Length: 362
Ligand SMILES: Cc1cc2nc3c(=O)[nH]c(=O)nc-3n(C[C@H](O)[C@H](O)[C@H](O)COP(=O)(O)O)c2cc1C
Image (cartoon, rainbow, N blue to C red):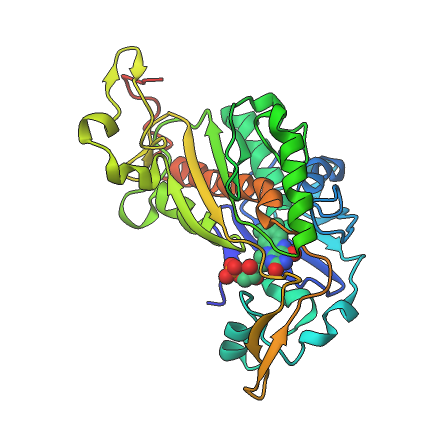
């Protein structure tokens, strides 16, 4: 009802606010026997974390995961897994000015209209701090998907404002703070971000995410389509304004002769569909792309209204990302992994007896 839970079999419920004492999640439906320990959350949480470079918010959270339940002697038991992260770097006074003001581009006004009360500290529940728990839950999903099916979910920044990659190498992505796939452009990105920060403004971004190794058959027709669930999951990330699967909106200008992915005994000749046909995976890479809006909290004054409906000028202080898309890459990967994990288990539940049918194309 209140939509804080996600998934049908691999179910993740998150709780917590940006400036509360802790955030957490409960994962229900995880298969038993998966080896997992607290240190395995470090890498992805660090990839999402703030304060790692001068190009993201300087809020510094340790993001240490505590496993409270569902794991015994290093293995999942099949019972609910509760994960907790204590918030350690809240500076609520940074947000004192906005208690009576609706910041443009934020959820302040819509939350107020819905609930008639709001926690203004750091955006409360609407803060992207909540996505930390999605990334944590997805560490488990990614590990199970990799071990059980050889699935690998990876993302990268595919556009920063007007700047697009001029080359592509997966190896470059983890070597720079932007998740950028072309190392030679990184100095130019740093320069652009420094100039942007100085100007007090922000930019949008595009993040691409790709899952390799997904077997054919995952996803359900009609209301449980893999692409439908993926689109909803990616759209649920803060600041996402657009989602594309495969070629997405480029399909508008394509011909059928170009877009349909022809098949031969050697496999598919192309992947315009993004690895999904009829809502069900084809065995090709599952590809998606998201558009993130520019950060709303900027130093440039903007017009709004206060609780009394009077006109006010808003300048957002506090620590903010000049481009929220930079840190969205691990979050997009997480949402893709959570959807795939859920659909893997759903497929196993209904169609596990079907087994492998031929022909199976690459
Ligand atoms: C990783 C990440 C970090 C974010 N950090 C900020 C931020 O520092 N300042 C800000 O104004 N918005 C930030 N946002 C976006 C807001 O959370 C979001 O715009 C706001 O809650 C309104 O929701 P909506 O844009 O999805 O409609 C961030 C989003 C993501 C994905």
